[in-house]
View (cartoon, rainbow, N blue to C red):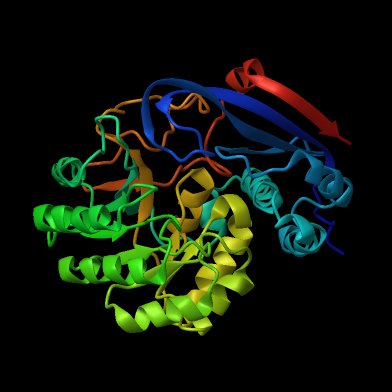
Length: 389
């Protein structure tokens, strides 16, 4: 009989740390250029230790691990085989069902990091592997009133700059508050400037007060040949009927699913004809959930587009055929080059000049997630820590 292969989880560390963000509004008040402002953004870093000395690591750039939820997660994980990702994924779905499954994604991603390190292979190879580079679209900061993205022409100027730098697509996050005529003018300004030269997308982030406003903006997107319209309604992207009706009235494809949780609810949007593309999120659903969504959508002939970017997202995209773009942002004309302090190996997302000459980025090639986190930086900025064993 072959020796049983197991990596027993022995302890879990969760660190809450803060980073200083300048000239940029907080996530709570929208990501808007605000010169002279300073605020501290909370993030979480996770370590899952095993008895083989292999540690899975995942750092969330957004607050998607509720520390209180770890009180439910940790007892389920301690003593478990770290390679049993499928079983753990389903158990966590149930345990976290009352808290929106927040925490499932980071734990799952850390377990995939363990698996890659154990097998000495990058995660995308364990997932099957399809490509090592993928095209990027520039995703803008939200419209502001501070001399940055403060007019339709300013957005068009940024789109032109992104086109010249080599980005394959350009996604607009407009103003959080109307008037709707300004968003329509914005769609036309960008479309007239770069339409037909790069793919264009509009993401109001569930800002429009009425179905009528969504129709008006959708028809402007039709005129300019936009690639997709994303989350226009204030329902949070949940109403299947409203989005099915919107699809009947406009030609521009819809992208929905960012604000629903789980593969099942996203597939319900597709099966109800409430979206054309479906949105995935590796930070929230984990690598396991994202790959399930990609394969389910593929069976229907539909593309999955992943929300934002990080190392785990890149490994998923490297193993997914039915996806068009990697999201890169948030770009803004007044916020240029930066170095991400979370990594000690040069990995970064969002730097305007970070794409290659083909408008692409590549997947990290090292074992596991293939990146090195700067734990000294994280420790220096930690405001709360907890170890579970």
